[in-house]
Amino acid sequence: QAQLVESGGGLVQPGGSLRLSCAASGGTLTSDYYAIGWFRQAPGKEREGVSCISNSDSITEYADSVKGRFTISRDDAQSTVYLQMNNLKPEDTAVYYCAARLAYYCSGPESMDYWGKGTLVTVSS
Image 1: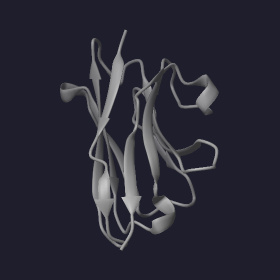
Image 2: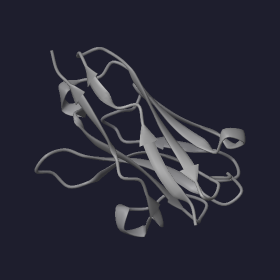
Image 3: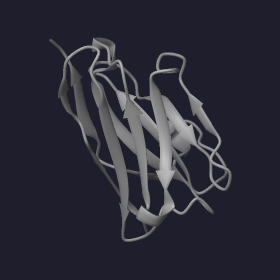
């Protein structure tokens, strides 16, 4: 069973960049089987989807709030999925989670099969 571990969070000023990583241990995140999603949860708010990359053909999708600023990608050889975040805004502050779904594409949080424990991103001057 794959376990997911996020890394790369931290404190960054508005307009800055971070790259989050989601690595699998005890299994793989091979694109043959798993769609991978990034979700985030800000204090007092519900968990929301940020981005998804499909299995097999790596089709990507983004929430409107991050479109044009965030890029999701995957490296199957490293069994790692990345979220490049540019032009960060204070409203991007949240705990970011990666999740895997044994299906072609992501779904809502309740339908994802595996979760990491999250990494905190704080955007503040």
